[in-house]
Image (cartoon, rainbow, N blue to C red; front, side):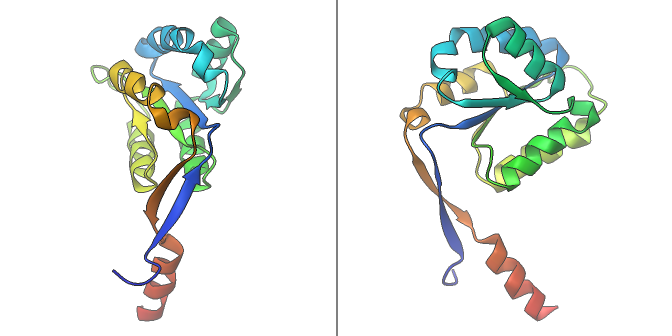
Length: 157
């Protein structure tokens, strides 16, 4: 590895959590939020359009809403991951139903992986994340130094 190839990022104790659910999973996400309300109310919540509104209305939790997933909401969440503004993604996806915006979903999952953001695609994984000791403490992790990679690549092309 080259010097400065990795950088350290620290998530704060108070996390920014994106909440997303496909239509057939929205009620499951709402129920999960109600079960974990005492934990979630200590964090910043956001989500894609309909999901954010439904979670806020049915749980009383403040949730900042973006566009609906098919209207660019998944991409908005992905952009905020790139900007370092989302720490965790809880995305109850429906593996048994075709999604018209599947390329956007795949892009979101990919960008979360690239930026080493924890992402739960089902209740079991969400339960593991929300009960982790890292949920309420700062968490430092290493990430590729993308800026350095771009600088180096621009010199060789």
